[in-house]
Image (cartoon, rainbow, N blue to C red; front, side, top):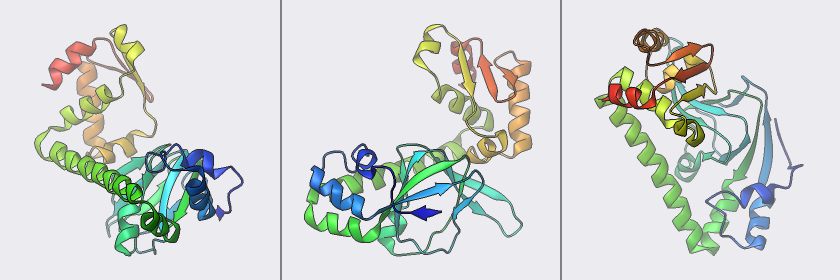
Amino acid sequence: MTQKPKIKAQNFLARLPLFNEMAPEEIDRIAAGTTEVHLKRGELLFRRGDACTGFHTVIFGQVKLAFTSQQGGEKIVEIIGPGHSFGEAVMFMNKPYIVNSQALADSLLLHISRDVVLEGLQRDPDFSRKMLAGLSRRLHGLICDVEAYSLRSGTQRVIGYLLSRLDEEEVAKDILQVTLPFSKTVLASRLNLTPEHFSRILHDLAENRLIDVSGKTITVPDVEKLRIFEG
């Protein structure tokens, strides 16, 4: 459900890399073209083919972007968490969305309208630079995903994901404990694996005593041993 902001949108917009160097009056202009979007877990934000009238940023919660095949299979392209934005490229192309978007948890988003963004681009050349930088980071991330899917095994992808969630305090203790932020099925799709393949990888890693799995919590007793196994 979309509605005019009840929160002070300026406080959140000013923290985004895209807007964090803007003067307060510029932030106010952006906020004037911003609406709140409240989503319950499982609720769709938009479907493939829907018109794109701006871009979104996540305040809290998680949103997945995914393709759905005619047979009903799903491939998750990206999972967007707090402080991150999405939809900028489609907005500039003036094309409909090419993916579906659905909340993985109760979420609050801000929708920034295309019109207010275009006005900002005309007024502030630095805004254009930041927008291009953000789009370039997104493209770089997608290229890294393609590289991982093409050149790394499923086991390497799973280990890489676990290592990417290392917490500094836990590393110091040489113990890694990860609580998956979403279901194993969602994570499997994000890593371009079938749920069955993902489960087999977890089972094999556990058999080799590299991890211990308890529900959504995965414990690694020896981080360096896991790094070596990743190759």
